[in-house]
Image (cartoon, rainbow, N blue to C red):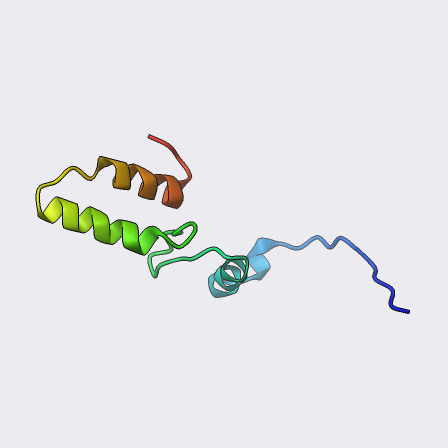
Length: 77
């Protein structure tokens, strides 16, 4: 018979370096670029490509930019 114990431990985030924190977040499904911009559910790269292509060809990219801002900053314009 297995037994499990649940406990709480207080830690200081300053005890961990940035790479350890990013590794933990990535293990929880969050994706980060080298500039540490979260990409949300993984659509950031494709959104950036869409934004780039639409801007390059002079088309409106407001919807894609709004979605990227929401994913990366957690804010809605």
